[in-house]
Each structure stands twice: as structure tokens, then as C-alpha cells.
Image (cartoon, rainbow, N blue to C red; front, side, top):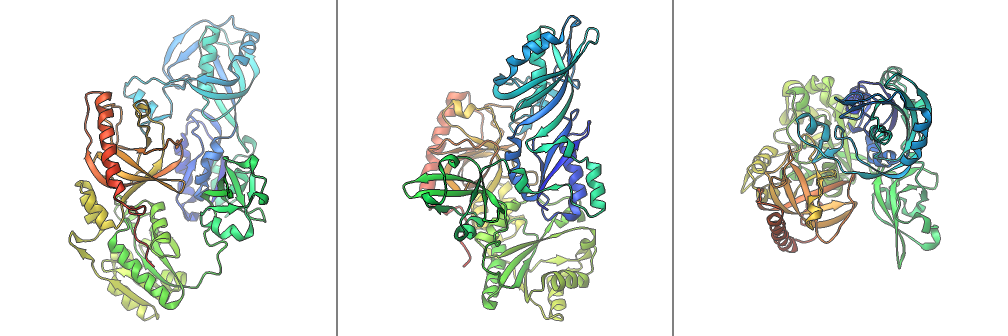
Length: 624
């Protein structure tokens, strides 16, 4: 299931609460567990909350960036620390003399491109943590004014209410504007103070309140096996200009590769350096891309591919073999399985698949999954692009699958679902209820059904048995070189870049910061030489992982990457960081001058190391 849901959020629920409710409702029909909201709506507020499901999560930024419309109630004469009715009262005055005319006269001052300071009690993240959490701990939090766009403000009505009159405003604005701050600033300008006492969002781009569904309505439709609530990805990004990819380049674009376009094929001048909808001749959405130009013509770069990679391939050969496992961290032990899988599919002249499970089986069996050495998206890319696998089949691990007998698993999954000729598993593979099935059991049962099972023995190297437990242990001990040796590529993490405190930029070393995803294995705090991937390009850099003790303020470790010789705007986009060499432990310096000198030295050491590594050193060697 890929698309958007236009939710009408009820008061009292956080945006995270809504996402959690929908995850539970949609779990039986989802192939991917990726669900996220497109722009936080405060718990007290109601109205439009776009929810992205599956591959649509890759389009969230294009929804969040659209015009928003709110109807807010402003109460004058009372101020709060959160600028709304949920915060602590900080002041009170008599505003009974205020008139509707006085309010209306001031509204134009707050239209256009204005500087606005967000409230300290907000979901804005600093160092990966919402500011409101810092305020609740008693920390002093200051927010700096930033430019926001207010397109229009209308005074809908004005109610005299003794010392605390109220005005109802309709506000159209761009991304990042706070209606709470607008109410607060309006009260300041009028000299009586004010706070936002109610708020409803009525529009986010093409998502309108009159078309929205409550969570309860979504649940009712699912009971009827209806998906009328699901909005196609193409409709959600219909505001982006469209570019038709030539038929001969569709396969290239669908695989995420750049497409060279002749100057006479498109009118590209108006489309340069802006997000585009890449479509085929029928209007089918391939993904979001951008267009560059040089002496040879135009180059279309696919930023987000939203279509199955085989959509424009020649007919896929029949599935003949698969490898089954959890694959919570792709290492050289797993590579042995993939090499055997490649040999089998080549022998038959067919295609291969990796069969894995979501959620991780231990989530249901023990209540907690192990930390993952390889994130889901990276794992899929490594399998498909480097390990010679043609398809990834994700089985939903639910109560039924967990409690199946060994015979049921073989009949339902291997015979009925997969229909392969051969299977590859590791020596320690188990399946069915309470792990009753082993690799040898699987081999015996499959032989009766005409399916051959290949059991890959334990892989030993100089560092011992290659398994995820061994890799995790060496990662926690700080032995990155050994981790990379066992993986066969550099250890990697990825995440969405968030706004930090911008200290790096002030001392000449701008960084991209992100907090690792929940459940991601991490290394010890320190400074590393590594490589950073962003939108298909790879950059050398120096990376800090830790809590930045010199500056302070971080409660959990985050990745802080300085890309050499470039200065890119990476905010709200996803980057991938490969860790190649441990340089030194993280430590606290006496001040910014000493920190700056050390970063310069770290950068030099990182450059020297990376200069000795070929361009693809951080990636596994392809199986071919």
C-alpha cells in the first residue's frame, strides 16, 4: 500500500499518536511498515494531517512545503509560555477596550515574508530532541527569529468577552509558520498580550478538511475491505511540474539512473533546478527528479524513484531460488549465502529472491528485536545492487506464521507462495512454532516436495565465526576496522538531516546532523573518517558521533558529518554515512578555538586516509 491518507485529527492526540493508531490498523494490509505524518499538528489542534504510507513517505517534503490554511481563535489579555491555551499563564491584563477595527488594522503588518520566532514550547528539534522536552526539564531555551511566509490573514469575527475579547482569524501561510507565534506577536503589537486559544487546520496543499477522514472512519472502511481513503502518490504531488521521460529511457529512470535528454526533447529552461514529476507517456508517475544542463544538453536525475524497478524491464525470468533468513546485518556470512544463490539462479537461467520477515520475529517471540547492523533500506539496496538478488520478498511475521508447524511453513510459504526449485539457508536457520524446524528438517521436508535445500556451513575467518552477534560485539567495543572486515564493507547509518545549533558553520566546518533511527546499532562515541552519500553522489568527510560535550545540550548521540569541499543544503533530506576509520574518542575541549583546531587536524587525518581508498572502497564487491 503506497499513498496518502487525509486525516482529520481530533483534539488531544499528538501527530505521533495518529501515526501509531494507523500503524495498528494498517498492519494486516501493509507490505512496508513505513508510515509518517507530513507536518506536526499540536495535540490541542484539530484538522488536516496528511499521512504518508509506504513509498509515499519519500514524498513528505513536497506535501509539507505547500501552502497551509488555519482558522485560529486568539484570546487577548492573557499570555502563556507556549503561546497557546495548553501552557502556563505568564501574564494577564484588561483588554476590554480592544476593538475589531484595531485588530484588523494591524493584520497587514504580519503578512508577506516576515521574521518570526517560534515558541520555545514546540516540536522543533535541536540535536534531534524536541524543544518542549528541554523546557519541561527546566532548561533555558531560546529561539531565533526566522523568515516565514504569511500569504493572507482574514478577521472572520470578533467577540467582546469582558477583559478578554476573542478574534477568529483565517491564516494562509507557508511551511514553518507558527499560528501560536502569530497570536503572541499580535498581542504584543496591540499592547495587551494574547494567546492562541483554539486552532483548526483546514488545508495543506490539495489536502482539505472537507475531504478528510477520521481515524475511526478509516477503521470502518478497512472493515469493509475498502481503501477509498487512500490518495494516489501522483495526486499528492500534482502541483509539481511534469516532465515526460522518453520511452527509450524509462528503464534507466525506473532504476534510479540519470537520463541524458537532448535539448530539443523538452522545453527545459523553466524546469531547471526544481523538483519535477517524472512520468511516462501515459502519465504514470516514475518518481521525483530534477533537471540540470551542460554542453551536451540536459541531464535528468532521479531523486526519488516511486515505481518498481522492473516496471519497464524485459520480462523477468521465473523465480527459481531463494535465500531465507532475518538478515539483521548483511555480513560475509550472509554473502556466502548470496554467492550460492547467484550460482543457482545462473545455473537455471532464472531469477532469485531473498525472503525475510517484518517485523523481526523476535519482536513477537521475545518482545524485543535485536539492534540492526544494516538498516532496511540499505539492506535492500545492497542485496539488489551488489549481491546479485533480483527480488526481496517480505513475509508479515504475525501470530499465524509464528505458530505454524514446520509442515505448514513448507507448504504455505515455500510450495504455495514461492514455488522455487532450490532454497539457501544458513546452518543455524530455524522456523515454525518455538523453532521446531531446523535447517536439516527443512531439507528433509522440502526433498519430499521436490525442492532442494542448500545449507551453508559456519563461515570462519581470523576474527572467529562471522555472525551478527560477533559484529555487534566488536562494534560496541570500538573495533571499527574489525567490524568492516566482517561486514565486507564500511559500517553505515542513515537518517534525516535536522537543524542543529549551527556552531560548526560559525567556526568554518558546517555539518549535517541526524539522530540514528530507533533499533539501529551504533559505534562508540568518537571521530571518524568516512564517506557520505546524498542524492546519488558520494563525498569524503569527517564524522563525529556523540553528544558534542564542548557545546553541550545533547541527551543522546547523533551523527555530525562535515562534507569536504562542498556546502550543501541537506536539511530535511536523508543522507547515508559510511564509517571507514576511527580517528579518536570524543572529548570536551576548553572552548571553540581549541575545538576548531582539533577539527582541522581531524579533517587532515581523514583526508589522508580517504585518499588511499578507491572510490568504491566503502561498498561491498559485487557478486557477479
